[in-house]
Amino acid sequence: LVDLVESGGGSVQAGGSLRLSCTGSGYSTIYGMGWFRENPGKAREGVAAIDSSGSTSYADSVKGRFTISKDNDKKILYLEMTDLKPEDTSIYYCASVGEVTAMQALGIMELDRPVSPLVFWGQGTQVTVSS
Image 1 (cartoon, one colour):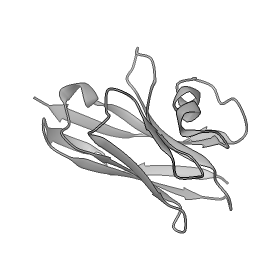
Image 2 (cartoon, one colour):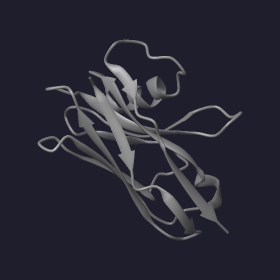
Image 3 (cartoon, one colour):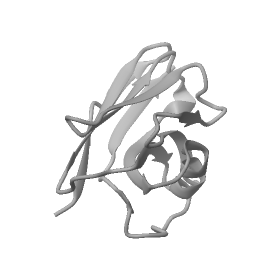
């Protein structure tokens, strides 16, 4: 069973930091990965992505504040979030996006249905930022 499990969410005050982790299991090879966020009634937003070469891409709303990284050996994806703002409040999901560029990955994550068997995501972790 292929699975992605997010952790590290929580409640912080504006200006604070959090680090999200995503642990993968049930697969031997994974290509691009990323994080997207979604609030009820609102469109998904691809937040950050990293492709198989290590190239990264970020949404304009988080550039300079969020950093995505991965540990391939441990199959862990990270999202370091600093200078958090109330508008960052959302459920954050870790996603596998297949063999695409990091920029393409942001768009793929904003689709509400997987476009290939290589695209899947976890159950999400809540991040709440208070002013």
